[in-house]
Amino acid sequence: MSREQVGPTATYIADDVRNGRVQPAAVAREALDRIAARNDDLHAFVVVRPDEVLREADAVAVRADLRALPLAGVPVAIKDNVPVTGYPMRNGSLATSDTLAAADHPVVARLRGAGAVVVGLTSVPELCLWGATDGADGIARNPWNRDLTPGGSSGGAAAAVASGMVPVAHGNDGMGSIRIPAANCGLVGIKPGLGLVPSRLGNGSWFGMAENGPLTTTVADAALLLSVMADDPDLAYVDAPETTRIGVAVESPSPVVRVDPHFRQAALDVARELERIGHRTSTAALPYPASPLGQLARWTAGGAADAAGLDVSALQKRTRRHIAVGRRAARFVRPSQTETLTRRMRSYFESVDVVLTPALAAPPIRADRWSERGWAANMAANIRYAPFAAPWNLLGWPAVSVPAGLHPESGTPLAVQLAGPPGSERRLLALAAQIEQHRPWPRTAADR
Image (cartoon, rainbow, N blue to C red; front, side, top):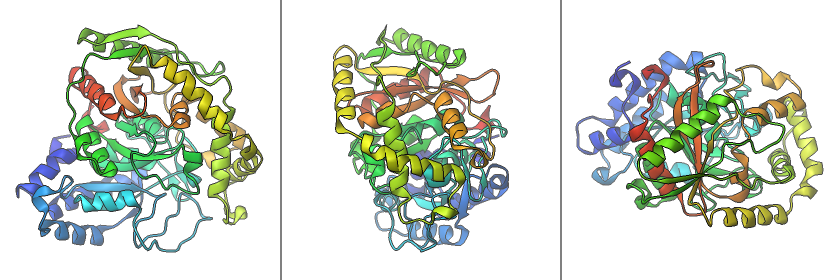
């Protein structure tokens, strides 16, 4: 597809709108046309707002501050687990309320304030608990291979961006829910560190593990969107990093999870490229938690907290089991779990600045009715293919998924994860930009 068919980047759109080369309504119509052509197949959106989008685009065009808007006229998708004024927040479930939101989530308000136009709401698995997206309205599919999932829980968001429906999307990440879909779909997805972006997700943001962040096709767009979400314009500028000490950790976080050799090799290849351009790399195994209890307790108990007040009988069977486990597991959520891991990781980062791992342990699982399978089957499938993300949620430290080639068997993207200590978002994005420069990737599945 040409750039016009796929759609330009958010950075390109905003520059065009600010300088009068294109009208926001024209950009919005193109996005709506792409959604109309592709959404039935991919089920990325659960709500599309054609009339409201055009009115909002026209309103952007006459804003007095148009020339200063960082996201002027940029179509953006919002994940259906944060409030958007005038729409119910269904969170992938028939058990949630159909009450219309009276106000935008702070992140949505910041995106709109920056000139973005909200095109619609993207599909999620029930209560955003799972690593594949089959919500109450249907099954989201991966644009690279429609038999496979785009991931979860920001699966609809990733499918929307990777198919070119919209240039960027909002997502959030409590156990990898930005980075897993980004890796599955060949996108840049960053989970910022604790406190950089307002979270306010569900009932307690899964004990502080969940963060809002962007899904994009380029590093420049990821930095731009993150800068708006964080209300920090400096984050939009991605400079070449100083020589960086990079620990390369390709081993599985779990003794029961095998790492696919193609994902392992992708990480080694990216590390070799970073060393070639001047960074220092070393093999440095990560001090992963000795027990997964801290992560699993927060995952299940966080789900139980989000389900409080819902009609349990209207929830999917797997979700009912998950929250039942979570009610019992809440007593195992202990500050010492985070404190111990933080202490060990700070020691690790005395000798490295950034760590590089595979983003996934295996290609995406099938796009299927996982909601009709048992809880144990869902848990096993999620953990086996995506074990690398959760430790960074437990820590509250930033991590980013970066494309790194194509898997020869699934046809879906390979990806690596870069992670670092608090405050390292700019360094991670700068390294990601160097990877993009030296190992460029197709922006969307249509570009392959």
